Length: 454
Image 1 (spheres, rainbow, N blue to C red):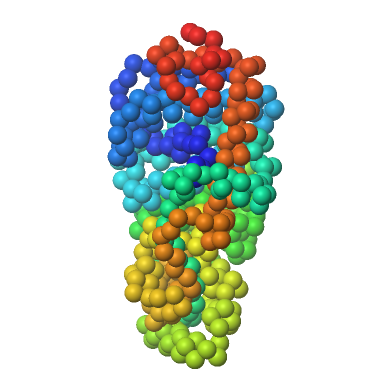
Image 2: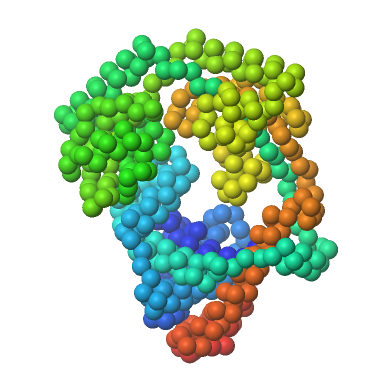
């Protein structure tokens, strides 16, 4: 089941600022529509590929070059069609990728040490590449965005697969949860406010750097390792209490301490661009008392007993008892962020929340766990019970069980065909040039047949 070829292999790797760099004598290895491709771009990605544990192979360089040439062709057409991306879109893409890399390294300091530069320098270095990436994505969307496949096409695609090419589908599980969050404890609420007031006083007074304070004291996992920064905020993205304060600040002004459902914050406005702002903030969450946590656990013990009597279905119990806004009205089922479905492969689930796998390890489909302690997204403690609704065994793909996956592969094949036709059509009217030593590459498209040799 061949998924859409990795035309964006380049895009997935371009954000490593160090990118396993090696000293090479740089040169132009290709030109597409006036956009040049340097050998350093190809070598940087090739060396990162090797760094991921893959074996050295000259064809890999060819694949990378074709991916980059495809992107440059998209960029040339995007310029012709006057496509644009906003500074806000570029900022958001940089921040999204930066958060991913910092998470992989474990801290801002480790990330900066590895790259030998500050986060801000890193952002500046990759800014133009990110702009190109977004433009090429937008252009590809124009080419394939309206494509769909009918059930008849899915059936034809699957029927045409050779028997030895039908993929093995990994084991997947479907999980529900009911979460009980204890109410904030008044004494701990007072303590949290006093703590953040002290932090704010030190930061505003210059006794402590904001970045260091965020790393040391903030309970916001989404920003504490990036100096508390949130960039390109528009109204409606954050809770109303936060926006009411942040959007009324002047540049560099600090807010007073204020409260939201997440705890106590203070904010500094970094920059304003019309109706869009950059801020940095520190959050101190209000923790729960041990006795309140035990009450939450006791409630879930009772819910489990009711569920085991079959007098209440899990879906109904989630709606009635769960404090998790994301799942309570969806029968308690967790949603896979990569696929949008409720099925998870074990490897992905272990990355999202390893504690779930530990709880489900010895459970059978239909069973409900005892209450287990968890940490919510806002860094607070709660209890939950887990429901193993379904567990599939590894199996050869079939239309009855795996139609969505086969449909996705059929659509990818259709997109691949349309892209290939588009590339070869555009190459007839777009200037392209490839260095002589790359002309022997095996490309999927007709680059070598249509280019002007250098």
